[in-house]
Each structure stands twice: as C-alpha cells, then as structure tokens.
Length: 308
Image (tube, rainbow, N blue to C red; front, side, top):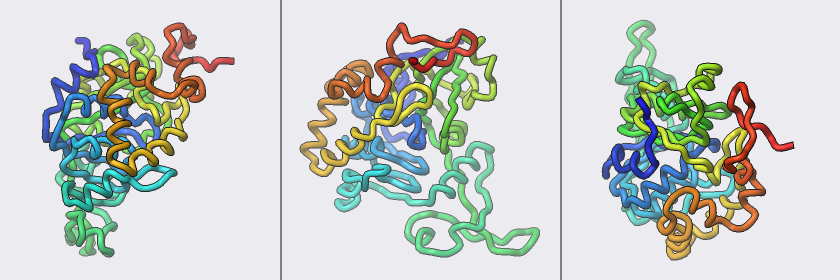
C-alpha cells in the first residue's frame, strides 16, 4: 500500500495540537520543511524532543507552536544561543526538561526496545537531576551498586528527513544520523520527508541503508530541499550563511516575525520556500542541481551523481 502523501496532508492527518513530537536530524537531514508546515497549519501546545537541537526548535518556539521542550542541547550550532528559547524561558511561557545528549538518547532507545527504563552510571551527581531530569537512583540486583534509572521516552509523532524512500515507506538514510533512527523507532507515528522517491528495486539493492521500514512509516512525502538550511549528504551542503542570518533576525521578535512571514507563513510549499531565498543560494549549496528534474542518477543504485 502506498504511503505517499503531500506534506500538508500528512501533518493535517497525523499531528494534532498538544502532540509530543520527536524531530530528527543531527546537523544533517534536519526536517525543516515538516517543521515549517507545523507553523503554517498553526499547531499549538506541542512538546518537542531531541538530543541536540538547532534553529528549527527556535523557529517553532518563536512561532508560538511550542509549550515544552525536552532536550540535551538547544541553540544555533556553530553560531550561538537560541534567542526565542531564551525569551520564552525568561517569560515563563515555555516548559523545559533538560537532559544530556546521551541520557536523552538512552530514553529514546528504551522507548524503541519497549522497556520502561535503562540503567546507567550517568546523572548520579551534578545539578541536572535535581534541576530538571527525572533520573532516579536504583540499586543493581546483581552487584548492589547504585545506578541511575533513565526513563523511556515515547513520542507520539516523529518528523524525519532522509535521502530517499519508496512509495511503500521504506526510508533510507546515510551519513550522520544522530538520534534519528532511535527517535523514529521509539515513536508511534513516523512522517518522513525525502529528497527522492525511488523504485522498490533501489531500496532492495541497498537494505543496509534502510533506517525505518515500511510497516513503521505512516507517511512519506516527496520534498526536495526539505532539510535546508541543514545539509543532506550526497545532495547539498549546509547553508552556514543562513544560520548566521537567523541569529541576527531572531534577536528581535519583530524581525523574527518578518522572517517567518517571508520564508514560512506566506509561502505555499517547499518549492516556494526555496524560491524565497536570496539569489544564488541554491546554486551555492547545490540544491538547484539536486532538485532539478533532469538531475542525473546512477542507473544501478538510484544515487545522485555529482556534477563534473
């Protein structure tokens, strides 16, 4: 059965207000298009979770979509802090549950394998357990030593971006996946945006690249360029200048609102978003070549071929 849906239809069908959402990507393959669709559809009261977050969390917070964040790191990687997040914390309008990157990954892994917690030696000291993270001390029944019990995290929805999928919903990703696989497989519903929809034969030829199998995928959406300004290995590079731009505009709520109007609220879809960027950006990072319908592909694997 085909899992192909438009991104708008997938968000409308599977993401209600108040949902606990895992947002994939770790610098690489961040699902910006899916996050922007949440903003366009006016979702409210969301709880977002991820180990190391970036400016997509900040955009969703600034747009008024988020009630709480569960994270290990939250900021603008390589640039600075998250300004909308800081304002929301200062005003008390945002719930915060801070873990470490590793312990949040343990929480997702526990959810993936179906156990209520995982034992660990982390968070036995320091101020994080007292201030935010609900890690509890337990005694190992075999050794008697004191350990932390890290509770499972079970998101209702996972939003991920990847290189490709077939119409059945077998999602393939390569390169840095961070917590994407764990978070997706811990979640009840998985919505995947991808650069390409490929024939089943391409998926079967490289099964080791499949991170989410079809039976775990609720919807797959063909959204070329869906990870900008992050990068997608083999398709386009990171738009570092856009992260710097966002740091500047997000310092002021009015400038942030204008940014969101231009690039998110007042554009109909991802193609319109890409066209809203400054001239030359798509060519500089390689998106123009990759999303062009005549882009060449390897005949055997379906992989994009670098322009010579």
